Amino acid sequence: MDLAQQRPPDFTQPGFAGLVELTMAEELLNREEAIELLNQNWAARGAAGLQPDRGGGQRPPNNNPQEDRQPNEGDNAQREQQHQPAEPRLRSPTPGREVDKDLITFDVAARVASTLASRPADYAIKRLNDKKHVPLWYFTREGLREAARSVRHADENETLAITQAAEGNMTVRAANSLTASKNAKLDHCLIYAEYMFAKNHFLTAIENVKWGNEALDAFNWFFHNLDNHQLREEGDCGERALLHYASQVRLDWHDKLMLGKAYNIGIINEELLAKIACKLDARDVKTGLDQACTSPLTFLNGTNLTSTPPFRSPPPTHGLHIRCCHNAGIGPPLP
Image 1 (cartoon, helix red, strand yellow):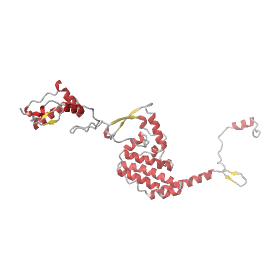
Image 2 (cartoon, rainbow, N blue to C red; image 1 turned 90 degrees about the vertical axis):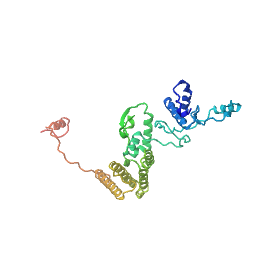
Image 3 (cartoon, rainbow, N blue to C red; image 1 turned 60 degrees about the vertical axis):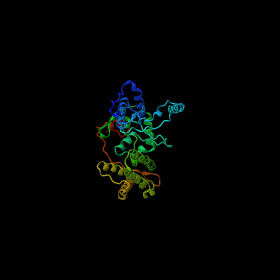
Image 4 (cartoon, rainbow, N blue to C red; image 1 turned 60 degrees about the horizontal axis):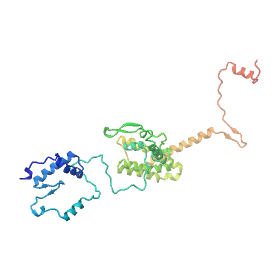
């Protein structure tokens, strides 16, 4: 009788338990999926005129009676070799089946890097994921040390908070990782060496959160052009002007990004930079004048000339202060 016309076996019966378990182990399936796969293989082999073997494979009909001989010693040795434990191998997902997204996959040939990068605070990473501005202080040595301390103490004082993630999903995260640090500083409050140290970790962070090559290149040129600007030849004053420019421009870039009007931040606006430097110089001049006006003048003989405070009339005392001074023996006699 044609195999396609035969009634398929019931693989749910106890007699097929071994075959079902073998299929489950080889194909990484549960029991229901293994039974369904066996039924599909039976139907496919019946249509092709083939006979099923115990492993679910295919073999042509046996037309040679010599092949149905008893196993000899060579066959036993070969069978023993087949039953020896094989080396572990990677299993590829079965075609036609959806791969579980929760499974952990990795390159088995890869190993840990020789240098482990410091991890910034979760608050800074979340801000970068949302394409929002975050001060570069979080990527300085001080900010990275604080992030490491917060990770060590997270298990001791763990407080959870519910936040809204992308696409309307809700995420439960540690509350201490969602708040800004009280020690954070604005970019222009950093010294120049701290700023240039932090920019390396910042560039790595925006690359990890997938800002894209265009944004990564723009910020890379932004820091490069600042570090090689001619104002650095003026020492601390020039570096201060560059830090104020970077602080204001980076904040403005994120504001424009939210409005869909972002620009190439890597191009330095020399006119804006000159205005910022001029304002800082004018503020220094004003501060110097104010200090000169409030400091006493010293003559060659060592005497100081201080400004006389403005005259203020004393509050009415109704003669109480005068009488108290007279009773204490101070002041002229009362009339």
